[in-house]
Length: 221
Image (cartoon, rainbow, N blue to C red; front, side):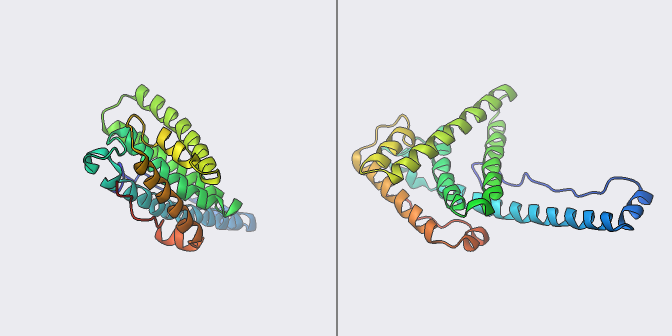
């Protein structure tokens, strides 16, 4: 298991419609030949996206699993609650960092960025079902968390670009949830986020897609 959950949920099953005679006819025409080539290119591109998405998401989740982020592992410190919601918040933080890096490449990686978002929430859906949540509960919860993710992303982006204390306020309000972190703990995560943003910003897109994200060491509370 690589995730909060599992990752291996995507499959691609290429096929050509029609019986053998239809297939032979399609392949015998120039238009049919071009259509088959276009199909193969599409499938190849989709497979490349799939592999890159799995690498990116695995890196996000591996970092989000670091025990340093959580209250239970941090001992007396007030970290992120070690709950489903708390783990989602840590995943969301790292997913935002990776997605903003992909977005910096412009339209070239827009489809891959969307695929990463979709995969994250497919994985979350699967996780909740594994925990025994009902169909109705899962659908509403995933929809709510999707809305929350966009809110977090906007808050963190504004905080990162804003003046002193804005990122800290966004992290205190969203990441730590119901806990009451001390100032040094919030400051440590804010410094971590800034370092991660800088590292990812300096990482060539080709390296990011081929090897996955490179984050800073997890903050020590």
